[in-house]
Length: 359
Image (tube, rainbow, N blue to C red; front, side, top):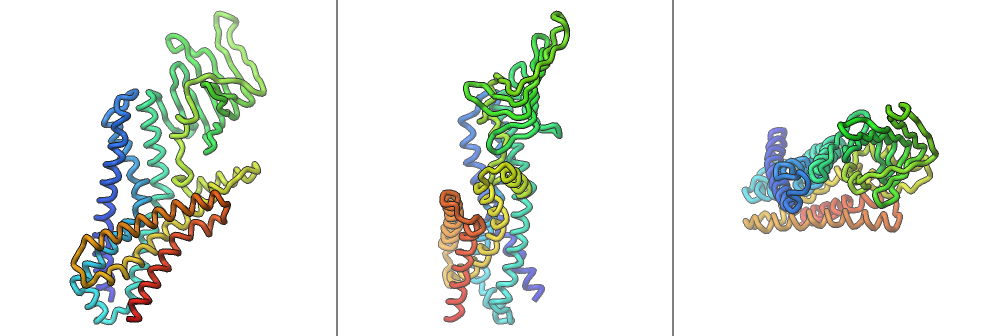
């Protein structure tokens, strides 16, 4: 039995990885096409676009892995059924329950890979991609260090300790230089909100001016101050990762921050619960591949199998998006909302298997 389990795992892995590679190539190609229109903006070149698309790959892989598990699983199991290998396994004493348990183990493994991608790899790569694109298209120097995000805007070098998803910036420090890069002033603020027309309002601001010819250094403090710059919230937004692409740890931390400040958390709770349930989609996808493969066992038309897998995979992706939007709009309980697509397709798979076994 162990030999059969290893053989099944090997066959499924080959087809799933092959499918994932094909889907990623297709998505990256269209991403690259979308970037061609921005070539020439600032210093944005083809090499920058290629690097940006490459850094998007982990995020695309995270989104596509359950679909790849479904399509690859259907193709692999259909091939085994077409070659009568599934029939031989059943004749050797492998029951549907045993076969299903093997598939569930494989689904758990790919679910773990999905979880690791979404928690550790995709958010970091996505943020790096956004930073690289901003630096190239806006001709700004952008970097992220332990001290926060650094942005160069003309004669200003700006340090932002933290950026919240509502685009409030925390811990702002602006170094303004004059001719020959002589430091003229340092402007600081605890928080900053965009007022429009290239102006930010800083809370608890402190301004230090350096004027050796006019008496040296002077410092002024105020409850609020203004900062004029070409940096806009839209530019800072691309340095952030969307809630659906944030890590679970970051989402939990930000939800706690919103609760302590009596602010609405539903959008981020949906994203957090989505992070928890999305890897389980690999389970329902690999399970639903089995009845699809057995349904097609007398057909040699590979195109029909692939088309069926693509339709089901796209339906899952579409349903996942729709229920999230409806859940946010109607304020439905987040655990219920994010579990609907996975449980729905798992239910369909179980019903199909039950009907097949009754025949």
